[in-house]
Length: 341
Image (cartoon, rainbow, N blue to C red):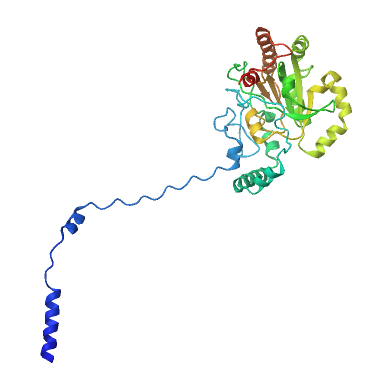
């Protein structure tokens, strides 16, 4: 019995040690080069913050170096002349930027449950909460808040960008848009939101500081005008302005009541970036032609050369209007193209 068991064990060992034929497929696999290592997946780009969305052209803007109420803090700053036109890339239309939500209940419900819009709104609120409250006041130390120097001459008409439509209440107690008032006229537009800013704008356009401008406006036969925009987003300040509107009416004059706007809503961060209103405590002055294009701009306190450039700019636009035979029934080129299409 022991002998038979031993023979079985020996036979099993011999079978395990028997040489097996080598398969050609193993040889081919051995000769193949090793596969390249798998590269790590490229991470998806992080979503842009709302600050980047609020200023899409900040890197390309001629005001990219100017201090703002957000972003990095400046220790030194010297304003430089505008090298390129500023403004919006699309022509304005009446009814825009009113600050009124015209969405239906269904649209509001759809936006409320839209996660992407929810994230966008959350980023907007975070950016507003992160802004230093006194940053605008601190930036006033740089040349009294002057954001940029006015260009020495007008921007070319075909390269100029557009002034936005603003909606507000005039001294005539009517709600109106600025676009119908600007179309067909050469307009000097001032934007301010405080007494300090109003004095800065007055250094460009007041009769005492710039009598030559008022001579050009009076001799234009109604083709040139002065438009003032008082931005008061604070409800309490807006109430005080309306409360003391009587003295304001006497100072402005009845003939200019329709050209004085009290704006409370609608001026977004995108609009401020586009037209260069980077400090809410500073006054800004714009020269807008009959097609609502910004041909010239100034900020802060006016220099003597800037006042002279403003007067020459008004005269130049009046000459262009005379060549184009602009009348009271003038229709902007963009509106005419839309009507044809």
